[in-house]
Image 1 (cartoon, helix red, strand yellow):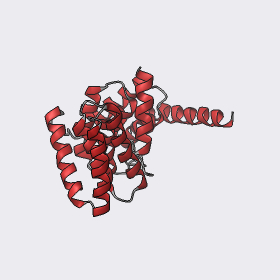
Image 2: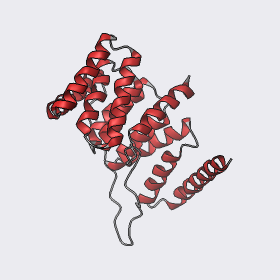
Image 3: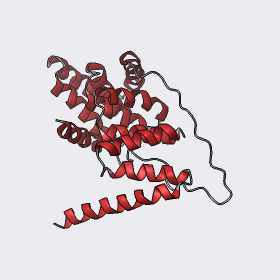
Amino acid sequence: AAEKANAEIKKLASQMTGGKSPFSAPGNQQPRTGETVKPSLTVKTTAATRENILAIANRFYNRSYSALGAVSKSRFNQDLKTAATEEFSLMAVKRLASTGGTLISMGDDHNQACVYITAAVKAMPEDTLSMNNFGAYLRIIDSINTSIPVLLYANKLYGQSPIILTQLGCSYFELNDMKQAEFYLKEALKYDPDFGQAHTALCDLYIKQNRLQDATPRIVCRCKGDWVLLQQGIR
């Protein structure tokens, strides 16, 4: 069941990238000679409660819905009406979330993507895939601080997804909360030791902190993982 859930999350998360990975953390983090490493911060965010997440979803939904053009709004209203006639079943909610993922990958209008994703979240806040997609969307539009409670809530719903855990780690990394970043990236690798994005982000974190001895094994692990994928591709 865990493998199936992770496969579904990975499939929908891949739709969210639009050429920009939701896992990306600032690259090339090694400090220059004489540069002082900034102290890690402790990030404070909205509590990851159901009520707060729905409030965030409503805020983004209302903002994006009002920004839609007539054609986009008409299309969305029809799709939402269809989902409503299906009483927002799990399949209907996943269809909304998947449509949002496709739209953000096209990169034309993030407001279109937002209304589909947030509609899915509002209809079924217990759906891990929709919540993961919302967190990924927030990261892609650079609402990093807001992504944290959403991803924390997704992690409450399903705590064994390396994708959710890595996105959490990367969000904390970008906000310079290195303690939390390291914790969640290591948690991701606990559930999937070969998850390349977590290895890469953790390597970046170690380099940023001048922990080169810790970074080296991560570089080896990532290279090994890439080599295995290359071999599989050749076969």
